Length: 383
Image (cartoon, rainbow, N blue to C red; front, top):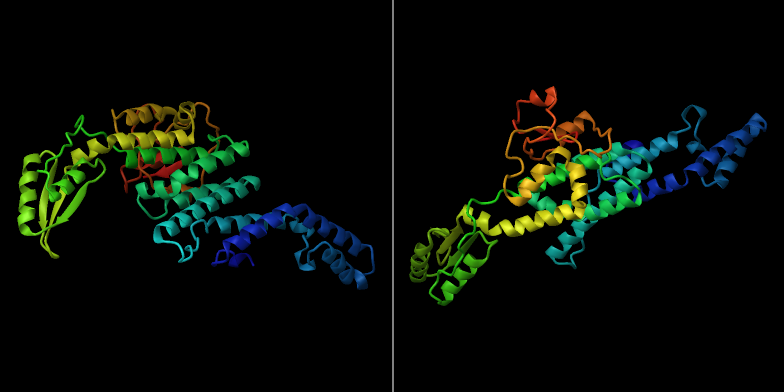
């Protein structure tokens, strides 16, 4: 049965089976002991029949008896099932067609997060942190950009995971959760927050004349999060917009899209303008994400020697990950003993932080030639 656990079996079935095994573990082992004791007290000719009857009354089968040589077979089975269901965290069936695409995707993403939390819950109950480690690496390696995964997985995951750890009396700085939160914080600061533009404040302004086409152009220009827009207009109206855009070369550029009818005028804001105009929303999003993990004291415990870099990134004085790759020193109150398998270390792929006030990288990390930005956050090997 065990080799079949990961071959497309239903997550719902196996997680229910796992819980039933765990909750009835003592009963199963007790039934085994009673059956063997009774079987030894009767004649050999009746042993098989009598043992089958005792086990049947306990809700089991003779084939499931735990032998003296392998009395922990139930625990082995529980952990095998736990490993198998952990691999199915993302294998959620699409929602029914009665929902629109957007609502179906939301339901799908919510189901994935709920599975992750449920798997972690069972791993904590079973005291199997290796399953959590491999689960975290698998999540970090999942498809999508950092920005997409923060919206779809990471941000929705943090509050229920934090609540779960609190309910289980688990320190957020204990292994392997410390490693996960270090990675998420570092990735958010580098890939989502990013750097502050050299422009102190872009002079977003109306550049149109007030006509219908110019009103749409101004709407795009004044939207701080919009980066590009295509206006499909007849040539005379495109020429009119080009003249208006020529008065604001500090804000945007344009080019003609010569396919489709009518042709289009693609207007693109300059990168430094986008960076400057979106800094406020990105900064607020970063602050909100950190707050969802914990207070400033908690973030300092998690990031340890990197906390100064976190503050610098939030304030916009230095981007997170601006310097060479290094190790993050654990926080002063972080739980010791955080570790992962070598495979997990090689697997987690996230960006590197900067190098202020940190422990030196181990020799193995310094020798890696494939990626000069390889870094250890906690003990998960990151690139």
